[in-house]
Amino acid sequence: MPHKIAIVGSGPSGCYLAQALGKACDDATIDLIDRLPVPYGLVRYGVAPDHQGTKAVIRQFARLFEREGVGFIGNLRIGDPSTGADLSLEELRSLYDVVVLATGLSADRRLGIPGEDLSGVYRSGPLTRHWNDHPDEAGLVPALGPKVVIVGNGNVAIDILRLLAKEAPEFAGSDLAETHVARLSDRPITSIDIIGRSAPAEAKFDPVMVRELGKLASVRFRIEDLPPETEDEDKRLAVLRGLQGVGNADASRTITFRFGWVPTRIEGEQAARAIRLQRPDGADTLELACDSVVTAIGFADDASMDRERLLIDALDAEAGVAAPGLYLAGWFKRGPRGTIPDNRADAQALAKRIAADLAAAPTAGDKPGADALRTRFAHITDYAGWLRIDAAETRDLPADRCRRKFTSVEDMLAVARERPETR
Image (cartoon, rainbow, N blue to C red; front, side, top):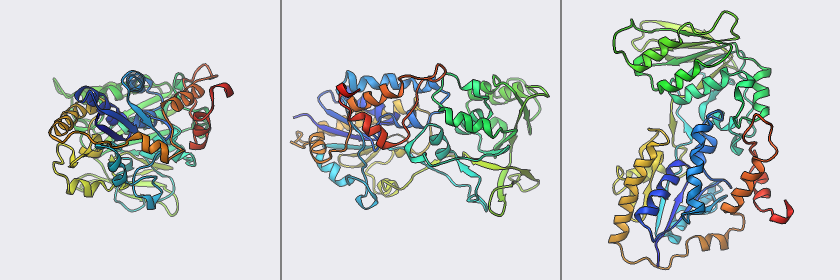
């Protein structure tokens, strides 16, 4: 009988792994499992809503379900049942020959400074998911105010900066909901300071991301802390110099890049009103008045799958082998490093390891796989249900939007379970 493989997490690392496993284990039955009724994880809910080119990888992943026989099992939470999960990891492993955890890292790293829990301090993960209409963040109503400070200068920080700096017409073609656009427009932002602890040449952003900022309307740029220009300098320095002075005196927003500053405290009694910074060597200090602070300094494990213990006890943590038949993939394995395409090479290496392990193992038994899940859990969804959700989200749209997402699991499930004749 064919081996049965379950991949927990249907974001890019899970989808790339399913692709690679389909080639490395051509006789295996593969299921992608997600806690939400819809697939694609980070691509759907983590990529900025105005970056539809990046989100287009979904079309590639759709072939998994439509042509390559991969199954989708949605609305099924794996983990500790005492925390509300439907099924423990141990139970899932009893149903499949191989289980791979590809759930990513959804928590935000903390600054570790006084004041970061004040009202008006937002973390990049919840904020990005909110703008992408993730059901977990439906209740978030960010009140950013006219003066915003962003801490961090990686690609996520640049995404947030771009979204905050855009005028309403510049969201044409995106899937940013009209409610979000209206909220950003009703409380216009006049200044954004983006803070990085590293020197400009060592900043974490992709130069292409920063170059895109130069196309924004009604924005002027100030670049602080640039070193003297040299021949053949780093691309990051070159693109920053290209922004210096861009814009005009009538611009409605000022964006200021500051490098080589470390946050030490967020001031305020109940809400953020200023942030204190100092140089890494402590030589200079700076205080910036603000109405809100957004932290974008990286991601961490949310502890829902006991990742730390899995890595400590792993047979081969570097290769992603946690235990016989249990593997780790993507950011869940290697930490928050690399872009969406970087997961492809990681997936191919892990697929080869899984295929080798299966070839060395006894013949697959009669584990029930998805059949047992469908028998036990009436609430799970499948790929056909996702197609109904997809059709509903892309039907009858304004001319300047490509999708209007459902913001609650209940609404998704109602559409997913519709019979064709009722639509």
